[in-house]
Length: 66
Image (tube, rainbow, N blue to C red; front, side, top):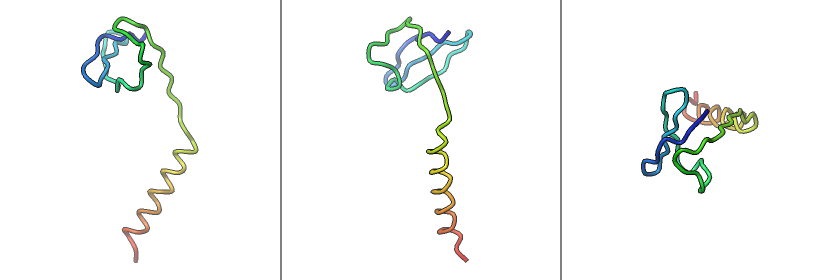
């Protein structure tokens, strides 16, 4: 269970299995309050990953021209 422990400025402190971590507050819905249980879902965006990899290759070719 992910529980909102507190808000600190633009950050929210989440408690999970007796440990805490910070997330940007903007990732939570505006109605979220201290003590609320939240769900977190993380996935890989394959299309965005491919775009980033191509951008890096393009920049590397520009920087390391023969």
